[in-house]
Figure 1: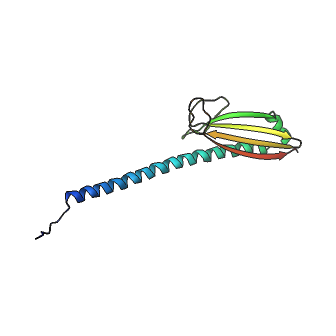
Figure 2: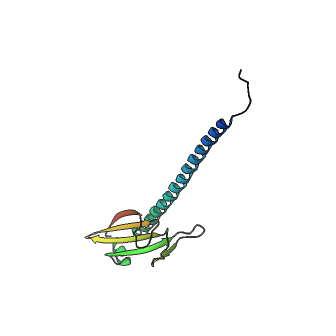
Figure 3: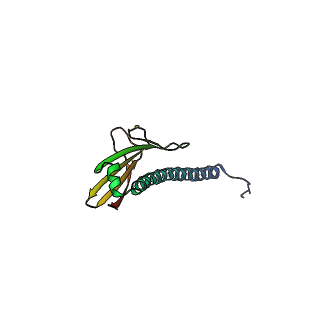
Length: 144
């Protein structure tokens, strides 16, 4: 005759611990992947903001002044390092820091039309490698 026992057997306990462990590992993996995705999105949003800011800076001048300011045709490069507690630091020299942004401004004049292209490159860079990600914004301005 079977006796009614209260409680769990060792096998049931081990199976429940395995299932619980699998669920916890799955949740932690999903959480860490979400944090990585959020971080990448923040860098991309910052790169877009830096490109838009330079485009806006250029567009507040007439095309003839843009060419004079940036010595068109020319390519200007600056580097931006973001610090959490302070304003961004902009430098014309490469600070050689990972997680920095490199902003390139290229202005070309074709007749009465100036084309302004701003490229912001970002991401973790190893020695002698290119930036893995970039954002490119282009706009045109007619001569006034």
